Length: 547
Image (cartoon, rainbow, N blue to C red; front, side, top):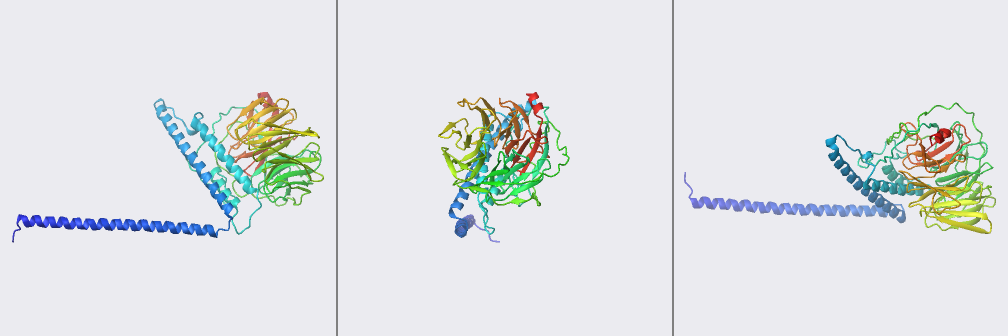
């Protein structure tokens, strides 16, 4: 065989190297071309997607202003959730650091035990702000008349957002909404034992949406009234829990219900920008023996689980008579009417609205007597004094105002700035006190004779909604966003917390409370966003003895 010389072998190796290098260059160029082509295809795909999205927006049946409002709402919620997510990550890291430090001693911290620290306070405050934004958004959405069947309503879209953040299951679905595990902020208020018995007596179920307000009649027959976001108000038998009458005259969410002091008339405020006065006639059914649903102390066996056993479809009462026409319709507001109340004597009513004004009407003529203006933001509540011509209005501008109509020629007003967030309600007591509750998680007691500063301040771990004060013993019932109902006296001493477990109590935000001390079976009522009202029997002598 011929043998290659050294020069020829070296030349062949150099040629192979050039060939492989050339092949490598061709492969590199080919890869770059493919990559650039892929990027071009992706850009073209994105452009086509954007064009398709733009065409869908152009083809949408929703008005442009509504679409922009929804997009703005989505972006706000996304930012709030992102902030909470980051704060929770920091909180988790802090817990892990503490666990690492305490591991040699055999001690560890859980997320719910970290009750102190700036991160906890900041995260809890952010949660309160998000809760307030979603509450306001939902009430605004449910306050508008229902949309057509063919096009999705804004209310349905906002409900889905609400479901994601609060865990509320929509009425059209049976499966619960999964919450991201990292979103686990739990308030850790230390529970104290109490021997006072707070018994859950009866549940009033029949509304198809959250219940904003409830009230008890001041004349015979004594019945319970509820106002709901399902556009209806219902009257209930307190002893049997049966629906006696259903008012369906409003075209929006019914936000408030109050009864005439001497006649069988009800006053309801609605998101359809009106307030209605309507008459009712009911016949109480035969009382049945009350089942012992709960005989547990107020503070024992409290479960903070998010399980909800009543998220299924609630069937309303089928045999309940209904009223669809109001006796008097009050129309002067340019926004949602959020609350209404009767002045002493029942000849005039006052309404509070999101148009930043409260209106005083004559019941007989339905004419506007006075327009009470001055609040900088939307009103949230109004209340009248039981024996004097005094009105107190609360607002999102962190203030509440006292309006004096005792002198027909002079109508004075006093502004009180005692809170740092939305004042959700301010109510009178039988004496000379006003009690105000706020989203800043405080409740303050004021003296009408000297309202420069509160005489008592109650600090809680959750936003406070529409409060009530018992007539005889002046016990304050606080409904909270965190599903709890707490009882305090006028000096700020905590008396009890109503029982709440997986089997009893409210499963969603508690919106309102109302006392009825003269009733033997139920002397306190509460309602919430779980679409039910609850009647409680509070052992008041035991509460005062514990004090």
